[in-house]
Length: 288
Image (cartoon, rainbow, N blue to C red; front, top):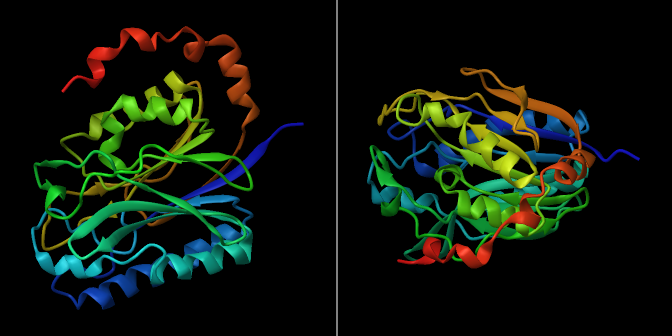
């Protein structure tokens, strides 16, 4: 019997930004803007929903203002608790990316995985932290320390990779080896510098590892930083590396698609990459 999954991705522009209001009000406005889309996803029968990178704020990393440290919160914390109610209400797995505060001065770029019963299965902390060309993330985030976990949800096995992580094939491979059937990559990326890689790297990860991916990018231009236009184009890609559903470049949007997880088995019967890999020959990869 086919294993059909209905999944959704939400790409969103920021209604308020630095200078418009206080940090709490900016976060509240962003969360409230998402809620109708989350509810629409639930009403449309979405089983797994992923939000964009640090979904409850603008992408504040082009600046280096310590005021944004106040946007961080514990996990579980207020935002996650709020999302748990929607997950439970709609029996919908949710991947919720937040700015996590483990303790004072210890902050992470994190995605929390909530199961369809509202329970928190765990979290992924972004492992690769950029510090270049307006993406000054090392000012805000420590590198992740939880490895590359895969979560057994009600519907399937889910992994998470966050934005800049996608430039590194090593973690993408580990997620496959750990059993991921769908890997979600919530992102915040602007046109220009790496736009040509947006439809190159993640289809390559999907094909090299034989899993589906859901790739999310926000939309709009965020002041006062104005580092460029977040070009949306969120998409789903299958284990053959084919993009089969894509959102617009400019609009707030819920992208929903159905796909059959049995395709993973079919693809891996042909492309035996896990069988034929030679880990004993890859020591150079882990040399400092």
